Structure formats: structure tokens, C-alpha cells
Image (cartoon, rainbow over all chains, first blue to last red; front, side, top):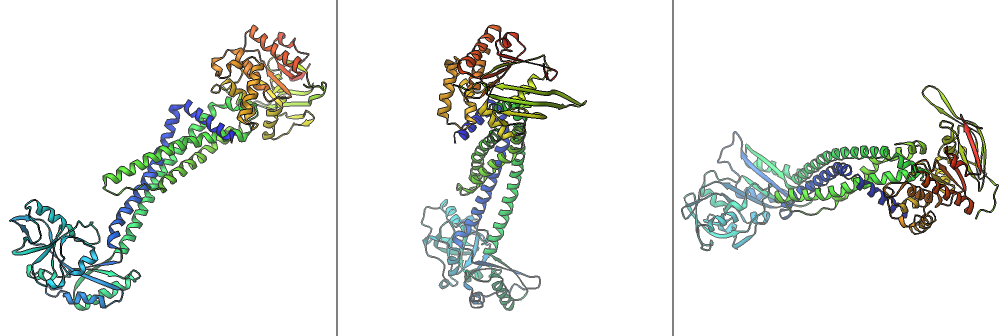
Length: 395
Length: 228
């Protein structure tokens, strides 16, 4: 124990003695460790951020987009009844939310408001987990009535023009006046559901047919049994829709597959970035080795004196190895601090949630010690192998 | 302290040392037979190139002979592993060098503690023993000084304390007064004489200074790698 403390103490003394050289060497390991720590952290945070949007939504979802093929006619569209019938074609389909998206000019108090119109039914709110901050939501009972629920961003825009309670106010969509019956809470943006609910006005699905002749059920969101065989459901859905309407293009996406793909992508990205960090660590390690070799050459006299008073090759090897490890460890610890700070800044400017992850600092710490041992071993071995007389005679 | 004098401490038989150089071989030692008794104070003299440094390195276990037998307190050390040689140097030998060879970044006390540290002694005991030795050589007030804050004579005293601290069987001194002025050199020599006479230490001094060798009991002269 005494021996180790003494060796560490002497290593520190030597490193402090050659301040400039030590700090330049530190820099290599520091940059390497910092990049590994930052990259791994950022990779993890990005994955976390990507998955966060599915936290409320869940991943047991299918999204079906229906678009016109070259030979299809606009009149041959999926009816609401046909869409709801999807829930009985496969027992794994738990809920179905068809919706219509159209773009009609929106006006309030003769001011134009940007946004889209979504024709929905009850199930849309349940599947998308949209919460209302006031009023009630659209139901099937609303049929063709001109009622609407406004998204949060639309509500914020409206507030600029009026101090009145939005509920009961009228908003003009195309040439028709709609009465506001509900206001939605902010909805976390999600790249699975294409529509941006914050910037939308929800109206009864059937009412859209009165607004536009192009109104058609062009999107369906399906909630699945968690254990469902996704490919099988996809096949059932495709063949069902193709039976009902002809010459339509179907595009079906699974939230689960999307998440898996995103995780895989970020894993590859993390691996790639860590590889780059690894290269800088390698360069840093070579720096450590270089400086330790110089140190061994410069201190041959000292090695000789220590050998003369009874230091064994083991003692000499330990002395230099500890010095190399101390050097890279200090670089590593500073690198961890800088790496975590970098990750924090990246998260801050990307508006991500920042969590202090345990794994990256542990990786950084382990790697920097390993670099010290690996690149310090050869110089230490050379020091230990020196002949006492040759060492003593060195200038 | 050491009652039994006249026990052979060091016994060299037909020791040779050959160096391989680019041109060919160079014989530094050609068959040295030498016995050193316990408690003796011996001077090794000879012109430069006579092989006296090589001889001292072999006796000091810093180097190994090409052929011949070397017994150290009846133990054959002619072909011993590096690790064991280090331990023997640590326990049985004390070195004093011409240019002191103190470690510049350590204090006088830390320099003296070094041999004990390689023995694995605790910091506390090592400190006590080292302080005692510094006191013996008259350097107790300089224990916290670094070598560059000390004069040559003072540094050599610290080096002698370092050689003594492990209680070795023999002290090997290579030109110990070579880098000192004559007054300081005499003081260092007085210290060696004191250690020999009062503590019955075995001392071997390499020198070409007659004032040094004349203070020794026995003078061993070397020329061209042979005793004369």
C-alpha cells in the first residue's frame, strides 16, 4: 500500500515537473475521451428523444395511407362503414380511426388562419391520445353538423384577434361557418401520424364531404393487439381494401418497425461516431507512448540510481506504468467532464431532454485507463530492461 | 557491532570480463582473484582503463562477470537473476558515487528513505531510520532540503547516509572525494574512517588519490585488468 501511494506520488511529482509536456500529452487523451463520451451520450439522448414521441402514443399502431392510382377514379372511395369494418377482418385489430385531410382556407373575423382540416370520428381522439383543454370532442353523432375542435396552435393564433371564450365562436372554413365546440391541448409532434394536430381543425368526418368534392378517407390509423403479427395484419388489410376499392395505392407503416429502424440507425450512428472518437484516442495513446519513451530516455540516470539502491525491474516498470496511467487518467477525467458538457450543450440547442447517463463516463474512464496501460507498457518495459550500469552512465 | 572479523565477505576467483566492441573483443578484467574480509577498509587504485570501475561494478552486482566465480558471504552470485541481484544490492550493498547521484526532485530525507522503500518498509519506520542516518552524517538539519540546495560535501554526506540506511555488509565508494575540494574531501574521508573504526563497516574505495588510499588498510592495485 505504502509502495503504491509512494509510486503515485512520485508519478505526480514527475508529471508536474514537466508541466507543458504533460498537458500537451493530456490533450490527446482528453480530446479522444471527450469525443467518445460526447458521441455515445448524444447518440443515447437522440434515441431517447426519438422514442419519447411514442411514449404516449404507444407502438402498437399501423398507419395506412390511401392514394389514387393511375387508373382509379375519384368517386370510388372507401366509405366510413367499409373503413370501420376493418376491425372485424382480423382479431388483432382493436381500434380503427379513419380520417380525411383537406386543405380549405380558414378565416376567423375575416383574418386568414393557416392550418389543415381533419375529418375525424370518436376513435381518432382515443388512438392519438389527444386531450382537450375545454369543451367536448367530435363524435359520430355529429354526422354532418358544422362543429369543430381547434388545435392548440390555432387557438393561440385566435387569441391574437379576440378576448372571447373560443367555445361557441364561429370559424369559417371555405364558405361554411363552423361552431367551435372544443379546444385541444398541445400535442407532441410525431413523425408517425403525418397530420400536425396542433395546427388542425377537427370536424366530423362526414361533414368534410360537404366542404370538398375531393374529401375521401385517405388515412387510417389502426391500433393492434401488442402480440399481433404485423406482416399478417398488413396482408389482411391490403387484401381487404383492394377488394373494396380498386386501383388505389396503399402505404402501410408500423410504429413498431419504425421505432426499430430508428433504434438501429442511431445504434449505427453511435458506433460510427465512437469509432471516430476511438481513432482520436488511438492518436492520444500514441502521444502517451511517445512522451513516456522520451521520459524513460531522459531519466536513465535516475533509473540507474534506483536500480543501484535496490529497485527491481518490477519496481521500475510500475513506476513508469503508473505515470502513464496517471497521465491518461487525468486526460480521461477532464475528457469525461468536457464530453458530458458537450452532450449537454448539444441537447440544449437541439431542445432535447438531457439526462446524465452513467454508461458514457464509465466507458470513458475505462478506456482512458486502458490507453494508459496499453501505451505505457512498452516504455515501462524498456525502462525495466535497462542495464543498471548503462543507465547510471547515461548523461 | 560486527564481532567476527576476518571472515571472507567477498571472494572472487578467476574473474574475467570481456566487452564486445565493433572492432573486436576488449578484455577489461583478466583473471582477478581477490578476497575481502569483513571489517576491512580497502582501496582499489590504478590508472584509468585499468579495469577498476569494471571490478567495482562486478563486486557491486551491477554487472556480471564473463567467467569466474563470485562468492558473496559464501553465496555464489556469479549467475543470478536480475530481480535477485536487485534484492542483494538492496540488502547487502551500499553505494557512494563520485557525483553523489541523488534524485534532484526528492528531499534529502526522501533520498535516504529510498532503499528502505524498495524493501517494503513502512513510511514511518523508513523515516525514523533515515533521520537517524542523517544525524549520524551530521545532516539532520537539512532533511527537507533538495540536493540543489546543498553543497557538494553535504550532498555526499546525504549519499553516504543513503548507503548506510539499509545496514549493508559492504560500502562501495567510487571516487567519493573526486568532485570535492580537498578540505571537504578530507571530511568525507574522516567519515569513512569513523565508520570503519567505530562501527567496523567493510568499505571499498576506488580512487587514484594517494591521500585517500593511504588512509586504507590495504591497497589493491590494478593494471590492464590484472592485479599487481
